[in-house]
Image (cartoon, rainbow, N blue to C red; front, side, top):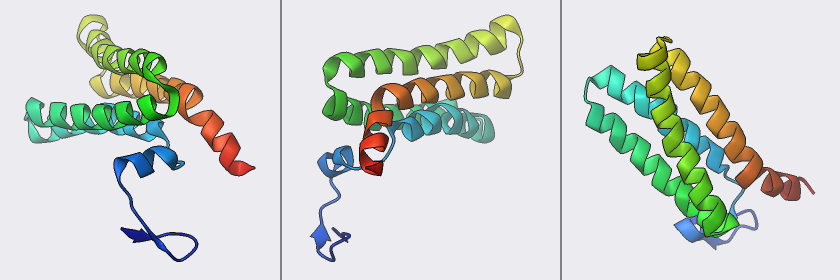
Length: 126
């Protein structure tokens, strides 16, 4: 529980988070970029994978609650596909790893913002 804008206690459960303006695109960026950074920095790929999975699950919950199952599945495919594409760009094409991760992260987060978050941001500004 935290104190809300009107001075009363507010429950910050996942259902409450889904109704907030918190952009799911941030979770996509964290999952892809921070997941890679953790894996590279620690040398433990599974730890980076855990960051990737946790951020993806949290984003998935927001997508389902905000947009429904269809867009959520499409965004999840984009998220996992971006992970795979970063590997293809780095290993197959020969781009530097951080460049590959940066490119797919910016693209996936941008698309996610446009599909899942932009209308919420416009409505909140009104």
